[in-house]
Image 1: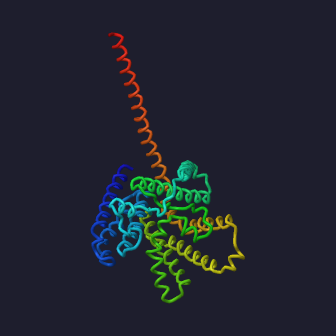
Image 2 (image 1 turned 135 degrees about the vertical axis):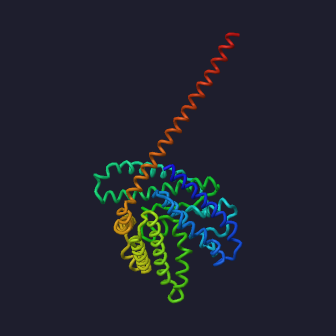
Length: 367
């Protein structure tokens, strides 16, 4: 683990240096192809960096942050679009907004202590879930698959929330939430567009959806042009997930995960088409509870059918869970050592203070 962490630090130092170059040099070029050419070496580097790890977690984090989000942000930046326009006023902000799935909050709200409580609850549930893996041999495949989904969701939430809070303190600004209770989604449009991993749709809209819709509007009405845009966004998301899966499995694509996103793209488009028929909506309107069960159930069932099989066959899921257990054990040991040092220092300071007081009193009595 120490070797992987050392490699992780070195690779992210190289990423920070590369993004610093993107802050100072490419803006001097005209937006469009000239600026994109100046960014190509960095884009190529970010495609290679996830291959430097054997750890599933470190490879996934680097691939998601740099290969996917940072590359898409930089491509949009080359055309004066996306979250990096206007150019952030400082290098530190540019690095953070390029590397991490964060977005500045336009209308900062008063601090609410409830998210901290929710975060603590998620960490506690995650700890219980890791404990349940000790009984995985006694669990049915369906229950084990459900645990994998919960594990994936909680770990993503914990990592992104931690990064958001650290960056928020570092930059001194309020940031948008990365997700919005996806388990309460009442439709696929609600799940993918307004609740799950919000930085991804925020990137895909200007990068894929909007250009495809503009092209489609040349041949069809604006109402119908949104459907090719939706399908294109889901297809691109599927292809990027195939790349992420390659980094994790180091195997040729099976295109199952692409089919997962194509299926969800088609279903989302159909859902929107049905919503446009107001009479149908009024007749078949479901209660929020039923809508949530159907939406989340559909995501889990199709995910078990198309999203996770390759990860299970290649052993990535098992490595993923084992690494999580190893990391928790590693952190626990380090915290135990730090706690021991802290308690020892308190005890030493206490005895030093009492010893000096005792010697002072003795000298005074002697005098």
